[in-house]
Image (tube, rainbow, N blue to C red):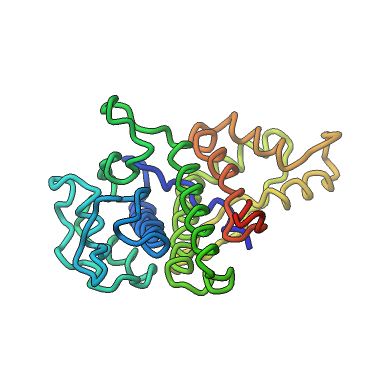
Length: 281
């Protein structure tokens, strides 16, 4: 089963000042559960991928979400995060955790410490240069798949992995990140619709109920293509979802910046073909 489309779009080191508050909260939850998968696969001492040197109060010396956050942020970037905002559970409910973070006084646009979060990707010899966003996302994908392969070799079945709270909660968190970021992208949906209509395109909007219960509208690309081609006023010989996306990307800067990573992340998966003992995507 594939990850929800666009699931990890902004799981990057820098949340960014333009990120909606809800997306920043969900991003922390996503980071944490990617870390929990590393712990499940390798143990605290064997994890060299995500927050490798983090140690916490859980029985295996791994971190709670509160401890994880305090490890990957500078002290001055933790202002507003209570000592026990999330609590002592290793696998807190992702919806509740994101809601608590969003309601707190913590600034979700705070910057992560890259060498602590992704030590193998960050180049310590070039401290002022952060890994590019695409590198961050691709590396996270790689780490999760490596962890799955390790677990498979340790006799953990695909079904057993899917049932683990670490994987289930990561999937939930990634859906939350995607939805909140899409909500942000389409904040000017009326402007996008007007621009498309001026080009003779029949824009179709669809209401989405997000995982946190809020609703927003986004463009239904497939329905827009169909409605345009079936319109009596249609003057386009050919039209497709990819052509529609190119028009939007070339017209709106925010979409141009964020849509390609969404499309790239559609490749993420929780399942794959087992080949020579490795899980191939």
